Every structure is written in structure tokens, then in C-alpha cells.
Length: 195
Image (cartoon, rainbow, N blue to C red; front, top):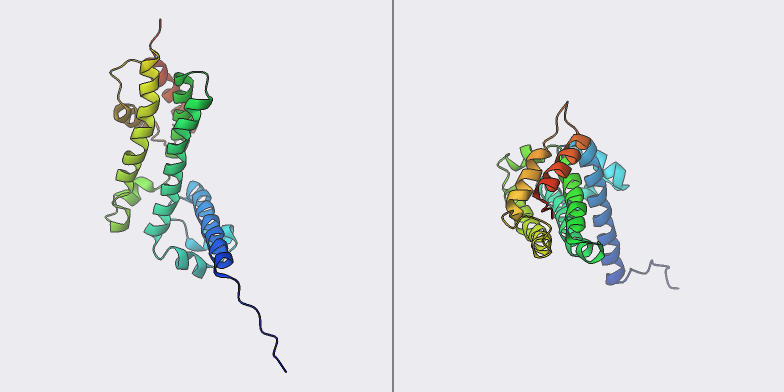
């Protein structure tokens, strides 16, 4: 008589489930980081993702691995937005302002990231470089299109604009996300070339 043994799942099914779990953990971590900062307890992330703490550590052995995965995903998403907005928007300047709104949202929700970047953790050393290497070219694509259309001053560089936006996004007790958005809008109005 043959025993009823569970049939093992095919490898592709297991890999797909592992990928979905990883994506759920990254999404949960991103949400928890917005609320609590990058030093949030792993158990809070696990609870939000609907997994055990061990699952988090199986996918991300260190906190730096998890922080890097979250921000890499968000950086890639912000970068991919630039060409899409350029194709969809009525003008390159409109695309630039919409992309800047997304960049502001990315920046103002990074509670504790500055401290994490300065922590000396070798797992986080490349995060700032990754952000620059990925987002500066995305912004440059938009600025180049604006300049070609005569919509922005040609002496504005992507790095300088992003640095200015970054400085305007340092929030505090009496300066919040709304203030940052308003000031970035004023900055963008200042780089716009008027006829």
C-alpha cells in the first residue's frame, strides 16, 4: 500500500511564492519606515507583511540588506517615472514638475535614512551613490527636454536641482511635507524660462 505523501511543489512555483513574499516584505518595510523610520522593529515589519520574523531574516539577513532593498526599489521606481512622464505630459516642464513631486515624496518619507547612511554600516555605504547614479540621469533627461523646448534655463544641472530639492525637503517640527512641496514648486518656477 502506498502512503499519501504531499507532492512537492515545482521549483518555479516555490520561486514565484518566494518572490511574492520578498515583494510583500519590501512593501511592508517601506510603509513601516515611513511611520517609524529605518530603525523600526523587524517584528513590526513582519506583522505588516503577514510573515514571521524568520522570513524577514531569510530574505534579508541584515537590516542594511532590508533598507537597501526598500530604497533600491523606490529609487528604481522614481527613475522609471521620468521617461513615462515625459511621454505622457503635455510639456517637458509639466513632466519635470510631476517628477519633482514624486522625488519630494521619496525624500520626505525617509525618516532616519540620513542617520543610517552616516552610521558607518558597510551595507549602506553605496546607497547614496546608487541614488545619485540612478536619479541624476533621470532628472537630466527631463531637464534636457525642458531646455530643448526652451522651458528652463540651460545653466541648471540635474545634480544642482536635485540637491536644492533635497535641501528643501529636510522637514522638522515647524516645516513639513506641505512646506517642502510649496518651496520646491517655487524653486521650479524659478528655473522656468518665461517668454
